[in-house]
Image (cartoon, rainbow, N blue to C red; front, side):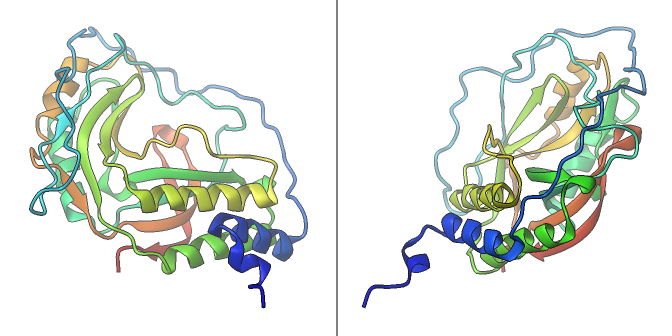
Length: 277
């Protein structure tokens, strides 16, 4: 006898089928005109100093349980810019449903962030991320007015069920980098994390007319820029990161209601699962 249809399907296809059956309808949308508030910070000087050294090879595998030396990606921009401009749909008081990895109890990551903060605290146009709000952005669902409770429950059931049944290895951060709107650390590729991203993206697209497949580059931002930040000072702070990299054994998969008022990301946790056993 042939196996049931769902047994021959990829887990992502199963997720989409389950959600479509559970919810039965797409959620609605709303549009908010993009706007700005909180003018970008103005600083006295901007250093063109490069962050990092080109040509440093990335380690390809773990050796004896170590992560390898923390590397720094060369900077490809000359000036920092304000991260806090209002993206389409955002405005004061907006709240957005999204999947993140959060880092409650990640002591090694917290210690590294505090070391960087010690060098950057008080720097003009540098908004430090406190250890309470460190995160790895994964997949957006939609603004709270766009997603009904039934759809959200259905898609989150699939995502969290998959995560609970899947082995997850530690996250290993081995590269620091600056981009035009911030500074952070990036991690080694992890197949399970890519699979989790795919499950989330298909779960969301099963109930909404959106896709979240573009450019997944898992990282944790340690500071956002709110204007012409002193990049030489950021370069100095990068040297404070542990040479042997940072490992997070038990990140938390979190479905959150996200806000970005007052130049910081904060959230309310709607559902959460500790990964890695």
